[in-house]
Image 1 (cartoon, rainbow, N blue to C red):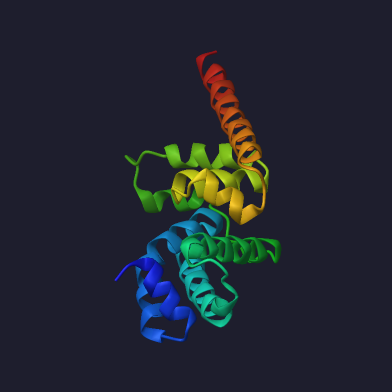
Image 2: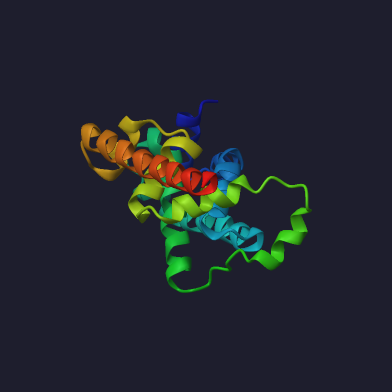
Amino acid sequence: MSEHQLVTRAIKGDEEAFLNLMHFHQEALYRTAMSYLKNEDASLEAVQEVTYRAFKHLKKLKEPAYFKTWLIRIMMNYCQDVIKKGKRETFEESQLHLYGKNEDFTFLEIEEALSHLTDYERELLHLKYFEDIKIKDIAVMWKTPEGTIKTRLHKALRSLRYHFEEKGEMKRV
């Protein structure tokens, strides 16, 4: 059965179809939560909460083709709320020992670079590159012209590139 058919059945009240959809998308939801919250327990809790919210508001989904995008948007909103409420645990240097001495900490540099972007830019990059959502779908989701999304995506990538180039020059000195 296709995802579109499962979504249609879930909207009509088929709980089994909804559970299959959530099982299929749980990894994407978890990755999104981890990218925002940086904490395994908080991310698992976020997946549970988003599952509940999605089930509760499933009938409001207008276009079944955008189910994954709709779920990711719920997750992003939930994570932003958690962060605003100050429940976010930060990654401290004292936790580095948990990863071992030979680990590659490139992810920390990426996190630092992303922290210099606006929330909008981070969300855009996350949707496009981590969740592989098409620009057309992002434009529909955000009710923004495709050209505007492309421009903002280009600007966000340029900012990231600038951050890494700047950091690289500092290391060479």
